[in-house]
Image (cartoon, rainbow, N blue to C red; front, side):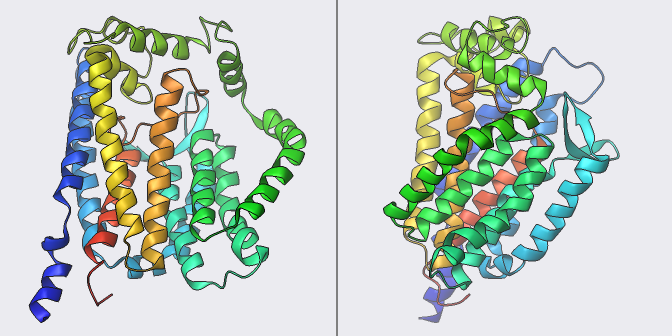
Length: 373
């Protein structure tokens, strides 16, 4: 019996299918980053090598979150949230600005984006809250957790980082569904939100930067400013469509290789991949993401306790939201809001945060059959 419990706490409960999907998507991402950036840099370290460093650090975070007890990790949620809020406030005062957004904290030659780590910390905070606090009435189930989310949301939107702000809302909504907020209650929330929408939109629109307003206008009207703020979306759709069935092959994409497509290694890496590998390649990538999300949902549904189920549900919601919105915005279905494609887009903060989240997700499964915390 003891041997069985030890095994269940070890690698016998490790899902190698999950790891294989993660590694496959990471590999596709590195290949796409190399393809679109191999002629851009001279002297500096290539982007794909930097991404391999981020993946290594993400792998360390993955292992740490995997082997640690997620109950103990959750107990650190509130202090971690306090640290994140301080970092987000520091970003507004002394953060590094790039392309109109002030989102990064510089540490010598490196910089990191606190809003990315704030997503995982929010999941920990809400999961810990709902697993401990009584959930009787609207105050405990909707209002208080909403107030917990609000400071981080406001600080992130102020940067401005609309994509991460929307991720906050998506995680909060997923948690509400997990704790069993009734459809009638959700309907009331939706109706109330629609009633306030004209006033809220006026405030949100007024707080947006000019480039964000122009991106929204370019989404509403595809012909709006095709040489300016509509340029990214237009070139992305051209790249995806030109891939056709089989694609143009590695290093063969004209939009990406000739630099018509900006930010091809970050937010628009999906468009680079679609141009080079075509519809069949996109289908393969979607199968990999759907498989990863399916296994994640399975972990959430079979979690050992409510805390594990809430953690898994929050991570799945964040992963789904980022995948859907990134692919949707590159394909012209959503406005461009600056959300990286998980495991594929270049960037240290997003890569490390995503891999740490996936390690925590596997932690929930690994301990499902254990009698010990």
